Length: 416
Image (cartoon, rainbow, N blue to C red; front, top):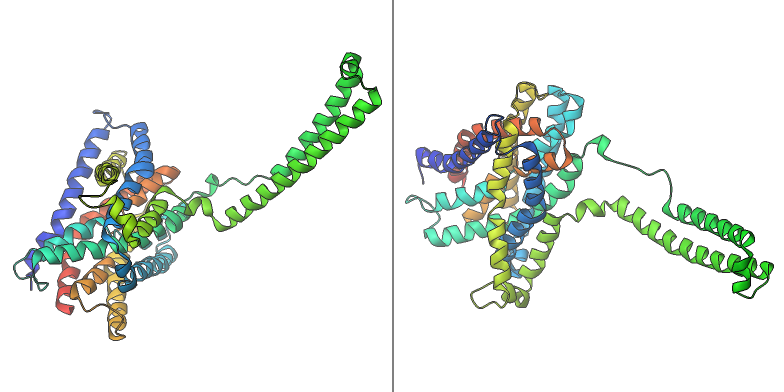
């Protein structure tokens, strides 16, 4: 069993890496340096959202997942769903009792709900595996299995972050509702065109003679043709309007974000062995595409952290986020959620539905103990919503996470 000191070092290493990169981003964004200004951060943030995050999600998930694992490890994504749901409920209590400014209510709930269930665990689990006192046997096998567990749990976290959290953090003033129907506009425009055409024919008799038709015949013909087109346009756009309304009700535009599309594509390819053989492996015909995606995906985490640090350079003195609310978020993420998570996982284990591997249980417990996902900073900047407040919350969460993660990791190892 690793000692508390060893676990503390393992927990601190990924946190220190994040803080160093965050400090670099802060330095580059200082007004006196001005290498990483606000416009540059926003453009880089769009690249993270559209390119780097989907590339990372696709390559890590598709390579780690198989059809057998989808069946055998079914509880892993359910555990992530429990983390988000319980975090959101506890976040509502933080809002009720800590009373943040009204426009920060959704931000507070999002910070309590969305945990970093991927990147930190990918550093922490191999660190635990290589310790000489590790209870998980061969370090190489342990690291391989642990990374597979973490990668498999990532897909649910990605879907929830880029659907539920993405929608939750959308500012109220950012939603636009049109007060008219597209199809009615088309019909109105068509009728207007019809009137204009008839007037032109009356004003210019040469148009009539060129067609060798009487004025009345020409007007009747034009009215008939335009009314036919109007009817067809009305039917087409009416159907289009209905489909758009269905899409709006189901929030399809928000569900079908680049990261979620990449996650679903990765699950399909990972579960289908022939497709996976085409994309991954030393002899895969399309390995050059997945290699490119891996290179792009590796840029996601450092870019996100640099953006986070750059947002901190704006200063926290005039932030609307109160310290009491920050303390509430920290206590939710690092005290309340881990306690509830350990109770739930022990109950599930007694029901006999978890794999026998103790490493699987360790990953489940640690999913409840992680700080808020850094991707929330990306979402805040995409929406132009409380970027400074989000940066301050993430800063305090990651500053305090080394201590709490080491404590809970030690407790989790003793509970295996």
